[in-house]
Length: 218
Image 1: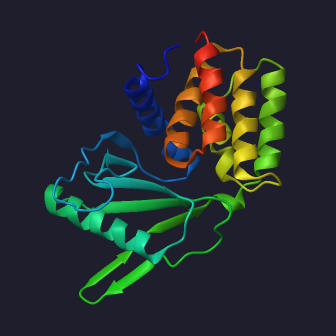
Image 2: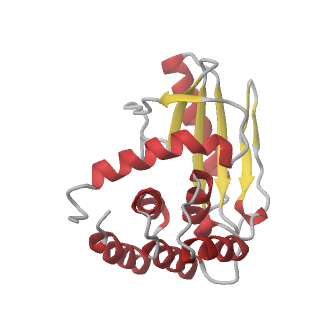
């Protein structure tokens, strides 16, 4: 496969898969109906795209962010995103921030006077990534097909609690995906890992991912 040429297609596939399965993985009681347009051209910050934002069946937005840092400025940035998105779309917004395992507690509320803002924090530190890895490795070694929730679990292992460094956990996850013989499960894992590495990956893990990605036949 040509890694560069199909980048847009891979990211779209990751978005589509996340849309269908995120609410189950994170235990959110709603139904996503479509991705939301989140380009906010008037925002003068480092990026004008939110991680994942969707329309829900109740007519509102569900906004996901993934973070490996715990900075007050990040919450203020999300507040700015959400206020701008509300102004643009006139919909309520539910924002879920998924924190990697090295973050165990955050300030999730901002009192800005007339503006009161809060996010829902989901801590990956509460999930044992080593236990998850061993369970999924056993399934893959036995050529069992992964459920969609297990696909998300495998691709999120680098963010979970574990004995290894995040880079080591990432490479181990990539190498486990490489052993998947069921093409549909493998492709889902690869697309989600690609999206994760675009945000959090370092040079070493991206290089190993490209090696696996370019050799796969799925």
